[in-house]
Amino acid sequence: MQTMNLQPQLATSHHLPPDDTLRAALHNEVHARPTARVQLPVLVTYVAVLNAGITRDAELAHLQLLPGQSGLLLQSLHANFLRLQCEAYTVKWERHTEFTRYSIVQALPEHAWLGATLPALMADLAVPPGWLCATPGRTVAAIQMAMVHGDLSDAHALMARAQTWLGVGALVASQLGNGHSWALTDFQICADGFERILVVAPPDTSETRAGRISQRLLELETYRLMALRGLPVAKQLAPLLAQAETELATITARLENKDTSDQALLDTLVALAARIERATAEHNYRFSATQAYYSLVNQRIAELREKAIPGTQTLGEFMQRRLSPAMATAAAAAQRLASLSERVSRTSALLRTRVDIATEVQNQQLLEKLTRGQELQLRLQSTVEGLSIAAISYYVVSLLLYGGKALKAVGVPVNPEMAAGAMVPLVLWAVWRTTRRIHAKLAVAH
Figure 1 (cartoon, rainbow, N blue to C red):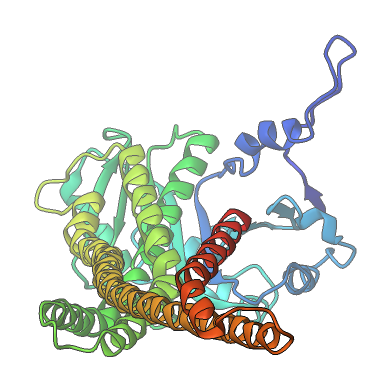
Figure 2: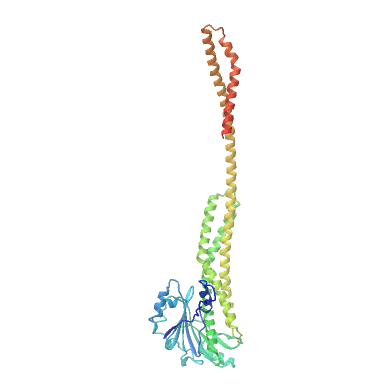
């Protein structure tokens, strides 16, 4: 019992400059998940579980429960791929961004070979009892795939035997590899919780080709289910999107009414924008992931190189007929959400323009009031200055009058009243001139 590490290593060459820190990781990425070699007849029991909140430590502890794997180290899980070779079976572990896959590859029990009637498979599961049920995570896909040798020349007989093996449901079937092998399923979940897929291939099918077929079919169904996880989100968002679109239309209409309070419009628009941004933050990843998984589904369908079996839908036709409407619904919801965000931004810009214009008008009115106030203040100042010149001149003339009277009292022959009267124009001019000089100096200082 051993752990198989299939990743090639890069040797540092003395002929080259030092390696970039990412060179080895990027080079080995193409070999990260090598295709298994599968020897028919084989049973592949496959479970994909959502790993949100599930640590690698928890998955390591689960893998260590397998016989002979108690010494498995955490560093073995760092590459997101691990193949454990046990005594009579192989367990493959793969961790992806949202889910982790466990594949148990073992020989197909004889009672379940082609021609059996809806054979029971869980009783012959090679892993210890309860190990699969204890897998950490929530199941998103569970598949039992039987791959057997068979004669592909008689299509009618082969369809009858496959119908017996899979049960009474309507079969979906394809010739893979342009007719090399057949894949049949009913896409139904059986009583044991698993879907069933039957692959019939000719005896000369190589182990690597069988491994590629099994990997593509299992990935196809897993990516289909992961892509569909966007559909409930789109349906859940539909009422919110419809309500938001109505509110936005109402806000836009209210923008035309000049009597509407800008503050009320702003409060309503901010609340709407917050709801839309919250929905975008919560669901944008889901919609992006849905499109990515849908692209992988289409890629895997193309890689199968299907040919139709008369009277039966191919796997690709079944997928596209039922998956395409769901993907269109999810894409439409994502587009509506993005469009709403853009429209809210444009409405916000319109509201800002309206507020800016109103602010500009208010500023203009305030400026006009300030201008009128300054004019009144200037007039008042001019009046005050005129009165000040008169008052100062009055005091200067009074001083000259008192001076004349004093001179007359000591015997100087002067008429004080006439002298004071004659000095009035000169005093007025002198005071006015002094005031103008002071104003000129103040203007130069500023």
